[in-house]
Amino acid sequence: MNLADIRKDIDQIDKQLVELILKRMDCSRRVAQYKKDNGLPVLDASREAAILDKVAEMGGEHADAMRMIYSAIMEQSKALQYPFVENKSVREFVPLKPHLEVKSIACQGIAGAYSGLAGSTLYPNAEITYCESFAEVCRLVKEGKVEYGVLPVENSWAGSVHEVYDLLISGKFLIAESIDAVIHHNLIGCKGAKISDIKRVVSHPQALRQCAETVESIGAVPTECSNTAVAVKSVADGKDKSVGAIGSAQAAKTYGLEIIKSNIASSSFNTTRFVSISSVAQRCDDADKISIVFTVSGHDKAGSLLTVLEHFASCNMSLSKIESRPIKNSKFEYVFYADFNGNLKEPKVAGVLATLAEELPEFVLLGNYREGLTQFE
Image (cartoon, rainbow, N blue to C red):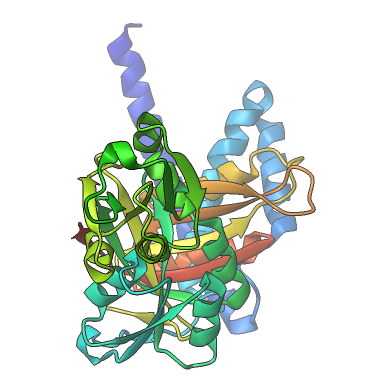
């Protein structure tokens, strides 16, 4: 027997396997209808475990392979069933409000802050209420005093803003929109100040991390501040030529200072993602990104995170971000942030989310939204 003959056998077996899997999927449709009619959940963990144990035993020396193959088959079966039953994991969404009709937003910082620039880009007619903290922005949104809050959630160089994610989860806010802003940080100082004069640089911790190489190269001491624009204003108020700030060109103009050096970030692709948040679930028709937060079963359960990722892979959904963070007061347990491409109107997307919501210990849908792009000087 040569290789061609073996491959013919494989092709014949594959044909039979596909026919049998199609019959199995048809059974899954009938199961879904029965569960819908009788108000039963899609997930039957004991039944699933029993099937996996049975096929593993039948697989003999290939037990692990049989378990993985059948796990994938059952994931597809559940994904097929979820659109048939009521999906209680996803809130009802209302249409996104047109940008030009938004009249009020809140941002952290003061005039000239990057969050304010992002807010003005998204909602050009909105009046901005500036807040001292991210928590205050969320409070104004929750109390209905502003229509949206605009917050930074991630930087391409310094990573996620965990405080904001924590606030979104605890306050049950949803992301309405997102904008990626390419940011060209500037070293800003008093009029007439030269780079050799700067001995101390003030800014937000994220901005200081993003520009650490420049600050170190001039021998200046980094000093943390609550916001980039607040830092710029403090330099203007202090009138000390030895103190510089990292901030926007708009902030320099607003507070009467000069740009000593532009484009000082360590990365030439320094981009910050800002989101607008709301207490109301909103979505536009062409939303293309979904953000979720979840935990998996304890670390003693092998493959639990892998199982989550298989949900996305089995439906050919592109996962663009996954990040873990230790859970407070726990021993080596983590919460995961994930972004993937999709729209909740798509049955397979809704099916994956329903699966995760039902199977994971904790699951939070942060939003289904559209992501834009802009640039700040």
